[in-house]
Image 1 (tube, one colour):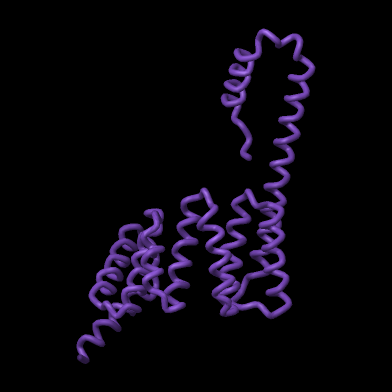
Image 2 (cartoon, rainbow, N blue to C red; image 1 turned 60 degrees about the horizontal axis):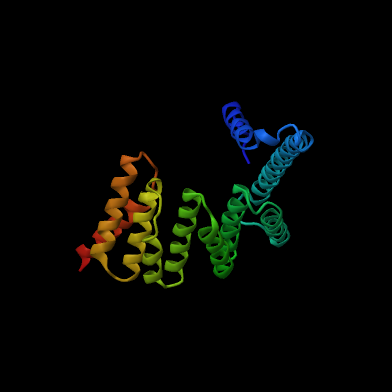
Length: 218
């Protein structure tokens, strides 16, 4: 929970005064206790956020690299469980689940990856994080030979900031359905969106070139 600004605190005090002015003197002791309780709660929340941040950074350091061996992988996924269990109401829990999905994919465990991503997609109130989960679920659906499911996921309200990546995966799904025209259109959209937003988007031009080469050979 973020600290209140001075103006917000002042507004809160004014509202409290207006609503409780008639009993202010009688409730002075309780009011004081409430203030100390609020401060304690703020300290507790700040401490939780700091602990979650530290633990997540430890997870990122542990999971760095292409693939982990068995022991490190087990330790990393145990750490994900710990962060999610102890800090489930924080951004770090959601980021830990996204990282867990990546680790699961590295181990060809697409079911576990889907489970972690679905948890984020269904529970996150953060649009960008939720959109990342939908995009990665769509990628997994394509990998699982379920391009129709991928297209359904790509129809979710994905943030505009990820529109180029969304179009890229849409092209992959259409290609898996052997709809080359739709795939080409989606990949061209992906390139245009990436250029407009000055975002790197690797591999899309190669897919378009390859599609063109196949057409020429037919």
